[in-house]
Length: 255
Image (cartoon, rainbow, N blue to C red; front, side, top):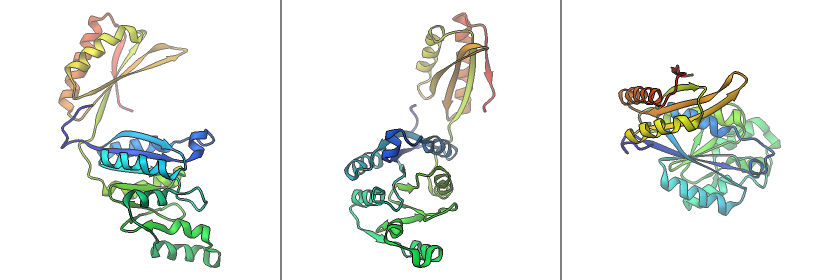
């Protein structure tokens, strides 16, 4: 989707962990982050998944943070040897890691004499970083530059997001409208959809087919930032579909 650079604020997501790539753990964080950013007027422009390899995390992080306004990472901030996200972020920014006194105090209050070396790993924050609150359980995340480092556990990650939102410079919120077409395949609706897309390069148009016991069709989703332009595009799409012989179609309310 093209847009005025002054209106568009972008983010990249970096999902870290061998368990995601192996298929042992199903990632749900990307969906939640995308929805959360959208409410704040930030477009999720790219997502990458990398293994627990320091060099690969650093390379991906450098690529994303130079390209987008914000980067959110998930995973790799626990107490085990393969939790190396803090190390990678520090390396990317060229700074050292230090134990954050506020995190140490939290840990001492919780674990007392059981605060061992493994748990102290979770208190390490790159020099110059700030904390991201964790209202669920365990130590906080952190932020440095335009990067927010969050936990991989979905419930904890969602809690941390609540402290990320107020720090974002949001753009215009993207809105969407959907035209539901029933009983016509994508081959019939492709040309009308393409014509409207070319006429409105500032919008994003997508076709999402569905199949079921009650029939088949596609949900045609139009996204943009200007309500008037979006409404005009919907009207044009409905007219173009009628000309193409599509009979069963209607705009549906946003979910």
